[in-house]
Length: 177
Ligand SMILES: CC(C)(COP(=O)(O)OP(=O)(O)OC[C@H]1O[C@@H](n2cnc3c(N)ncnc32)[C@H](O)[C@@H]1OP(=O)(O)O)[C@@H](O)C(=O)NCCC(=O)NCCS
Image (tube, rainbow, N blue to C red; front, top):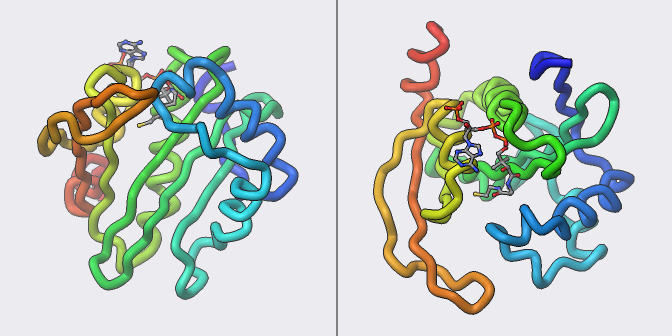
């Protein structure tokens, strides 16, 4: 199998058990605050994620299938029509790390969300020590815009957080559109 065998499927409540297990993996907990996860909270997040193009929806989520198995999730949340922007997130099961699948899944999501004509800019944050996440951001065209020093606390420790941005213009230029 290759990264081209990936498929994004719109989030459904049946995906929540997989999502809970994914968020409990050490590789995810190392970089993402999953302390307050509850089944109800994750179900709510799935139900709030609307189909692309639905008016007033604040976010979109897909689960990632690879060879028919669920391997991760990608999302675009905090959608602001007023500012034409949204925040990107991604998480892949650790058994599938390091094969280019994260970059491929996020690139596929960008193809979906940039169909929204109001969307002009995407942003995301990474922890300074999360090199894989930075690699994904760079691979799909995000530019490092700055570092917010000691900006957040994870597992009781203050962490530097990096801020990344991708404009529609940059994304279109990269894909020759
Ligand atoms: C972030 C994540 C989705 C990356 O998934 P992935 O499929 O392993 O990523 P890719 O294989 O596409 O790799 C992306 C780039 O990062 C690099 N990279 C991956 N792991 C790395 C590591 N541990 N150290 C340094 N670079 C790394 C890869 O080499 C690749 O760069 P390249 O194409 O120039 O070689 C995955 O690590 C993950 O789910 N982590 C836990 C959750 C998380 O951190 N989410 C993001 C929160 S901001």
